[in-house]
Image 1 (cartoon, rainbow, N blue to C red):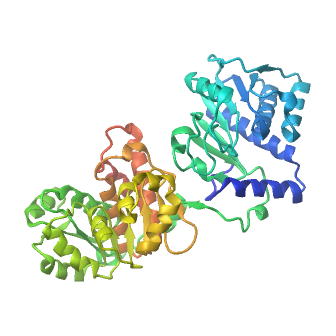
Image 2 (cartoon, rainbow, N blue to C red):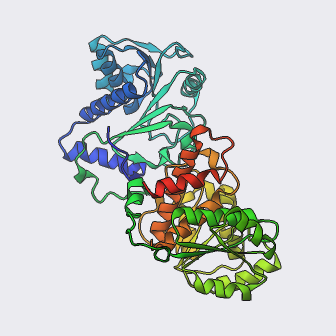
Image 3 (cartoon, rainbow, N blue to C red):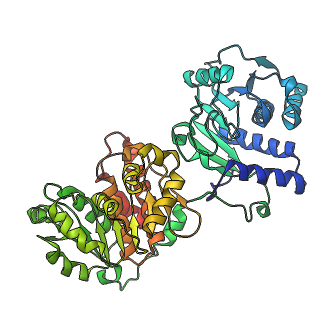
Length: 492
């Protein structure tokens, strides 16, 4: 198996790579199919070492062909294999027909689908429908998907879980809930978008030994944010360094009655490594915040005039956590909207931005889907239906770098392919998580990272901190649980 690559492609591009290899590279399609099956058998052995009885459920097309080769190779390794077919193998064509023929010639037997799977098997292999599916799963195929999901037997999906759209990650009627998905040739974007994380389980990848030249100049739809890339942005500090080397972040937020968000953002910036972090907040909160985190420099401000000298001392301004929509906030935002220093805008600052849009190259915005809908004058459903288009629209309308939060957070600046975060978990759907992210990104910007690098690194660190914090369970995870984990990750 190969490490997950960074490039994420459309289904059409992956097909083009596959076709060109067969047409021009001297590698037969059946050879690639056999390599794919061998990779799947290897991955299954690693993930389900005690499963010695497999049931392979085959549909039509090359996905079924993969399944027949998997069945043959697994049986040759001593696995007890049974095969269920939802399409008559005699009607298969091309490489899929050859795969069935070799399995049958080897002595393998195929049973026609009769409405159920064997719930006593150690592993079910989903070889029903591949990444080219474009319409809802229906009839016997839908019944098979539902039976597999109801069986409680571990499931390995070949290339993509049946029923998952290869480009959008949408469920087409019904879809296999796999424990492991082994995908081939290139990562399909549908493995990461939409509902994909509910259905793919663990993800393994094999490039089938396709030469790198066949990937050259192929347009990726996304690039995965790689932890190794993030670590390269955070080199070891010089022994003679002092706090003045690592920037000064000013958090502006915490309107009356909402001090927690500003506190979380401030500590996020500290944990990310900012040299100094100040908070400008409603005067009623200053003593409370500094009591909870004395390392923060907390200033109670009555108006924009109080804020101006604090801004002049800051390298980066993070505005929005707990800001509110009061007259106090309005006065402050008039000043902040005219400021050109590097900034991160989140939460209530985005509501102000929606009502008074402006473009600046020096700002990172971090909306969740609901906030993105407000910024673009759309519905949340519209945003979720095409997150890539929404990301592009946010960046073009407001400039700088846009971070569209959610399952599979997306990041984009003015140029290049957008970035995709594949870490994180549903336990992070909790209050205050966005405030911590705002602080992390601001803290990284203060240390000299570009807006794009700080946004990429901040999103990745935040998500991986959430995964580490969720090791004891996702339910009940709170934002402050991430703070100690951030320190470990920025020093990895």
